Amino acid sequence: MILIPGERWPGSSAGAPSAAPAPERPTSKPGRLAVIGLGPGSAELMAPAVREELNRAQDIVGYTTYVELAGPFRPDQRLLDSDNRQELERARLAFELAAQGRHVVVVSSGDPGVFAMAAAVFEALEQSQDPVWHAVDLAILPGISAAQAAAARAGAPLGHDFCVISLSDNLKPWSIIEHRLRQAAQADLVMALYNPRSKARPDQFAQALAVLRETRASETPVVLGRDIGRPDESLTVTTLGAIRPEQVDMRTVVIVGSSLTRRLARQDGGEWVYTPRWYGEASASK
Image (tube, rainbow, N blue to C red; front, side, top):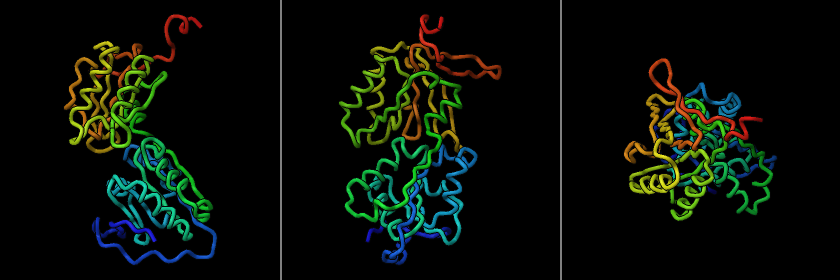
């Protein structure tokens, strides 16, 4: 039996004592486990299939902040929310519930396959020898990622080849992050940088900028998208030379342009940022 503190019902307070343990596994076939992406956070940017899956679910499992974004819920739906660093525990709980024949949804923000819960779910499945877990009806439902949401607000900075890199060294060493940044910069890829700066890592974003400035021009456009799709969203267009580390936090996605990324004035006084689909004179002539 796997239980996570924080089990509650809609209308109860977060972190309330767990309800009665889930029933033992029935003899009927296993249930369904869907890993869903909420998108940036606003209801209008959530895929209809995701909303439908949430409406049908019996149990909603996820990080507390994301579970709250996934509502509203019916009184009969059970919420099992937990701390952000309990990904494998959440995945195992979800499989155990689905193995009992229940309809379970695991919630991620953005897209579940981009630095989110889908990978943890598959890791838990690979580690399990339980044939019932492997028989669960497993589905991954995509969502709009933070990089896509910020890019759309800014224009089209991801219009050509790009990569996505997390700057968090919780699960990989900083040396690997620095190597990948340097290689991506040398390859002239647009970069979407997740988890750029936290209270526990106040200096690493400055180190990342130093690496990028080795090969990228100071006038390279940079887009800072914070909480895009939520009430407090903000979008800033700056340059690699001008950006300051204190402008970003863990709720910011940073898009660093390539050598071809451009800034285009808007009539409202703002500006668009886009990366052309062509690359150099040879491509432009085709």
